[in-house]
Image (cartoon, rainbow, N blue to C red; front, side, top):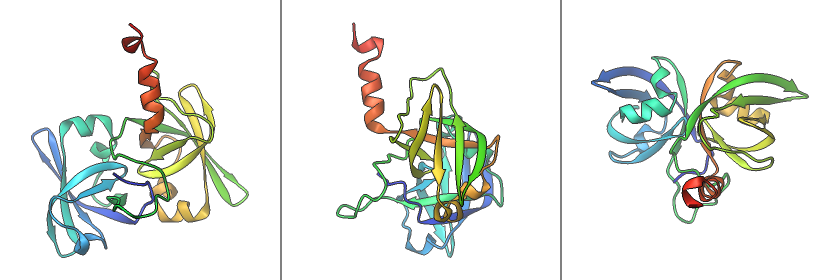
Length: 198
């Protein structure tokens, strides 16, 4: 369980394909505090630490994860958002984030707006994911509030601190991002689906 408040960046040091899976070696200032079997959010994807060595640790993404996220596009030198799991008793400064990405989205526009930025995104019409204005959304692991909500689209406003301290400053029109929709919204959507009305 996570909150969507990014702790640090990770730098991809090595990408190793293993059958249909990919192992990533990641350099981070968090490494010395990590333990094997610990869960860490990587661009919003919960992955398990498999080894540590000085300031580099390793994780592996399976084929199913690679199909639903942008992790398969990562290459050496890329910067990713990192967050360690929520500790019971900590403040929940973002919102409840599972680290289970629902799908990817594409950035359709970035607009500077008086010292902040408005990012617009589109996502698949084939799934039943939804957003609502002032609702929560997780983008690359970052907990955000939806500004405008449309059919298969939404926008978010990014303050300078978030822009600088997450990889939002690397997102541009055409960038593929990981999306985790609000858990309560997903339950409501499923309850109203045809399978539950029979």
